[in-house]
Amino acid sequence: MLRCLTCIILAVCTAAPAAAHQAEAQTPAWSFELFELVPVLLAGSLYGFGLMRMRRHSGRLAAIAPMTPVLFASGLLLAALLLVSPLDGLTERFLSAHMVQHFGLMLIAAPLIALGRPALVCLWALPKSGRIAFARLRSSAAGRLGRQLFSPFGAWLVYFLMLWLWHSPPLFARALAQEPVHALQHLSFLGAALLFWTVVTQGPRGEGRAASMVAIFATAVQSCVLAALMTMSSIRWYPFYSEGPFTLSAFEDQQLAGLIMWVPCCAIMIGAGVATMAMLLRDVETRMHQAARR
Image (cartoon, rainbow, N blue to C red):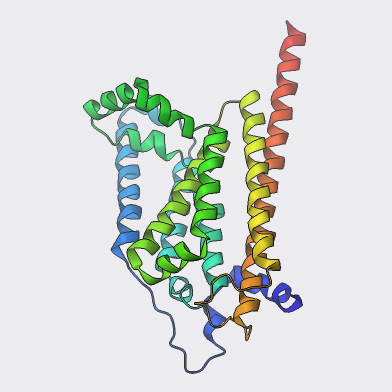
C-alpha cells in the first residue's frame, strides 16, 4: 500500500514511463480508432458550425462568454489525447493506466466540455426545421421523460450506473477484448460525465444549486465507495492484468488504480460540491439584500 501511495502522483501525471522498467516491452504508439475519433470529430464540427451561425446573429453569440468556446475546445482536445495517445495502449497492460484515462475523461475533459455549453451551440448547427422539430420533441411525452435525465437525480443515476456497470469484471474484460466495446465504454463514461457536469454547472440558481450540491456529494460518496472496495479488496478483480507499472505487482496495480479513483477523483468532486455550496450561499445573500431593499 505504501508503495502505491508513492506512485500515485507519477501515475496521474504521466503513464508513458510505466513500461520503461521492462526492456522487452514495446513502446506504446499513438492509436487512431475510428470508433472513438469519429464522435469527437463530429462533436467538434457541430460546435464550430454552431458558433459560425451564432456569429451571424450577434445577439445570440453574446449569450455565451468569450471563454466558453475555449473551454469546450480544451476539453475536447484533452478527450482526444486521452483516447489516441500512448496512454491508451498502456491501458491494455496496466489497470492504473486505465484508471488515469477514465479519471481524465470523466473529471477533467467532461467538465471543460460542459462549461463550453455544447447543447446550446450545437443546437444552432441544426437547420431551422431541425430546431423547430427539436422544440416539438421537448414538449412531447418522450421529451418530458428525457428531461428527467437532465435533473440532478437523473444525472446522478446515469453516472452511478455507468461507473459501476463498466467496472464489473465481466464488462471490463469484454471492453479489453473487443475494441468496439472498449470505445463504447469510453463514450459511455464521457457521455455520463458530460450529462452530470452539464446539470450541476448549468442548473437553476437557488433551490437548483442545492439539488446540484446534493448530487455532487452523492456522486463523490458512491465513487469513493467503489474506489475503497477496489483498493482494500483481498482479491484481484481483473485477473487478466498480469503486471503493474513501476515494478508493482498486478495486485499492487489494482490498489494503485483504486487510489487514483479515490484520492484525486473524490477531491475534485468534493471541491465542486464546496464551490456549489458557496454559490448557493451567495444566491441566498443576494436574495436577502434584494428583499431588504424592497
